Amino acid sequence: MNKKNNKSNRWYKKKENWVIGIGVLIAIFGIAVPFLLLHFKKWDLSKSTFDSLAPIGDFLGGSTVGLLSFASTILVIAAIIMQKEELRLQREELEKTRQEHHLTNDTMKRQQFETTFFNMINLHQSILREIKIDNDSGRVAIRNLHPVLKELYLDKVYKDFKDEIINIIINNQDKEEFNTVLKEIYFDLELNYFLEVARNNIPPMFDEDMNFDDSEYDKYVSKVLMGENRTWESEKERLNTSFVNTYKDNRSKSLELLQGFNFIKNRLPDAHIYNFRLNFNHEPLLRLKKQAYQALYSDYEPEIGHYYRNLYRLVKLIQSQVFDSESEEVNERERGVYRGILRAQLSSYELLMLYYNVNYSNKGEKFKELLKETNFFDDHLVEEDFIWANDKDELDYFEKSK
Image 1 (cartoon, helix red, strand yellow):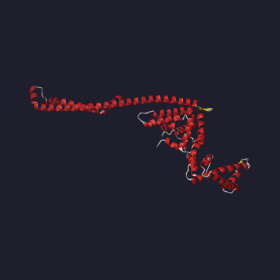
Image 2: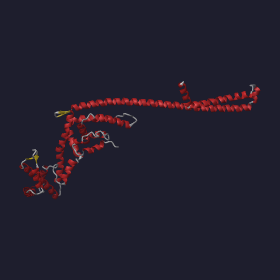
Image 3: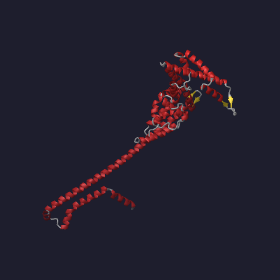
Image 4: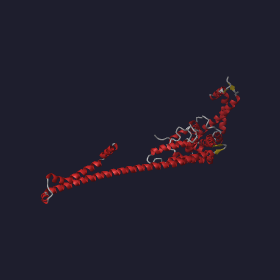
């Protein structure tokens, strides 16, 4: 009973059924009019009766034809409505088919992607295990590149940058400025030697807990710097004469002096020395960091080159994958998931050395572009392990803009 009521309700809700009903009623009425008139007038169907109905017949014929035409028009409208509804249902069916095809296609693409992705993850682990540097392998070998990079910076890059500054000082055409800088450096070198001799001559002291006590030496240094040490003051007069006779205006001799000077530990107020400390220690220049990493990569490319190339291919696979052909937001969200899976395979030092590779290696430039605004390194680098004080400045490039 309920099913019959439901069918009846659905029939009444369709507007085309109402239109058809109205059209049929009008058609029936148009056909029935002549017969109803004959019935109610009680006319017979003789020839004389029809001859007398000529004017009325014309009227009835015109009315009947008009009603039938109107009914046919209504039925045509009903047919159009039904056709429109049928087309709508076809479109809905096509849309469902398209969505199913889209879903099936995306599912197949994801399956193919995941197969390739996890195979490459396994390949990456295999490549990592095969890395051998000196007596170390795998993650330990990658980690040990960190102190090697630091040593290259403090040795090779330091010497090259120091030579740059020395050339600037030596080629300074202002003689007064040149001699002033040289004299400060000469006196500083001699002061360090003087204090080193003094330290060796002052006997070691220990406090009650047998901890080394350096207070006597500190007092001695303080007096020297304040000009209260007669020995040093007398030595300064001798050194002044020695400087004039040996180094003043003598650029070739001064070169030897400058090469023995420590530009990092010194605190002389000279602008050249200050700029060296600033650009090498406090805010290292990008070109110096690149020089250090390029030297490292050049030395160890046979061991680590394929490791970084495979990582690059893994990230490129993720970034080029289309997970949803209609939503870039969905694509980026899914890519983030797989980037996270890849990142989870890397140790802290692997991640840090990758950070140095993409930022400071010429061959890592394309890799860096792939990781732009992906938050790949976000909160996963240990800043205490940074070799350079301003390494964190490079992180802005990888952060996603809000």
